Length: 393
Picture 1 (cartoon, one colour):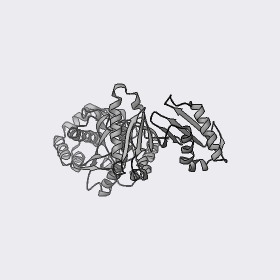
Picture 2 (cartoon, rainbow, N blue to C red):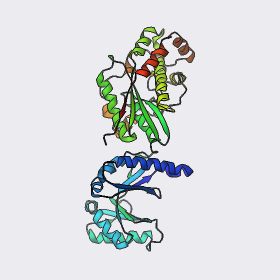
Picture 3 (cartoon, one colour):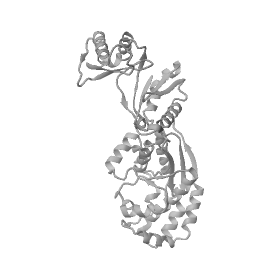
Picture 4 (cartoon, rainbow, N blue to C red):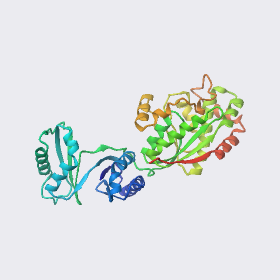
C-alpha cells in the first residue's frame, strides 16, 4: 500500500478538513482506472490501500502519480500487518528483502502511535533489528549513516513497515487557494511560474498569445505540449489560444513611439487575459516575469503594466535568476520542451532599443492615440480558441 504524509495543511486549524478533503478528492481521481482503492486520512497521513489484485498490481503506477500531487509532503510504499511483534519482524524481512540484500548497513526506527502496544519504540527497534540481523547475516547496524533505514510504525489500526519516505511535491492541494489565469508562453519562465502557483493550491487557466503567420503552428504545438506537462501536476487545464496578430500589427503601424512597443503590448495582453479571467472566474493573473531579466521587467515597466487592469498579478519567479528558473524547469520536466527553437509572439516586432524606464503618463498618452486597440483586444478575447488539456494518466 501507499502511505502519504500531509504537508503544511496540518497547520490550517479549523480549515484543515477542507484541505484534506480536496487532497483526498485529487488522489481518488489519480487512482481512477487502477482498480479498487480505499483512500482515507488519519493522524496527518493519507492511506491508499489496494482492495483487489488489479489495484495491487498498479501500486507503483499510483505511487508515481502521487509523487506529482501537491499537498503531499512525503510518501512511501509500505507493508501492513497485525500489531504483533513477530508479525512485524516477519513482515519487515519479507517486504524489504530486496532492499536489505542490496545494502550492507541498516538501522531500525520505530514509532509507536498506539500507546497500548506493549513494547515501546526502542524495544520494537531492538527486536526487529535483531531479527533482521539473523535473517540477513551480511548486514551490520549503523545508527548514524545507514544505507537503509527500516521504519516500523505501530498505529491504531495496524502496523506498517517501509524503507523510509521520499520527498513529495509539497505545497497545497489544487484548487484549495482559488483560480488564476497564467499567461503561458513557449519560454522557460512561464511554465515554471505556473507550476509554482499550482503548488500553492491555485487552479490554473492557461492563456497563450499567438500571431500567425509570424508565429508557426509548431510554436503553438510547443505551448500545448508545455500545458500537457503541467497537467501532470495540476490536473485538467483549461487552455485559451488567443489570436493576437491584429493587435500587434496595429501597434506596429500606429504606435507613435516604437520604443514603448513592448510595454504597451504587455498592457494589451494583460487586458485580454483579464477578459478571459472574468469568463473563467479567475481572481488573479500569473506571469513568468523575473525582475530586470528583460526590458519589460524593470520596476518601471512592471508598474506600467500592472496599471492596465485591476486583478492582482502574481510573479512567483520575480526574485529568481535564470539559473534557478532553469534548474526548476528541468526538475518539473518542462525545460526540454521550452528550449525548442520556435518563436512566440513576444519576440515579434520587438524594437531594437526598448524603453527600460517607461513613465505611466507617457504610456497612457500613447494609448490615447490608439483608438482601435480596445476593440481589437475584445475581438481577440472573443476569438480565443478553447481546449481542455487533460493528463495522460
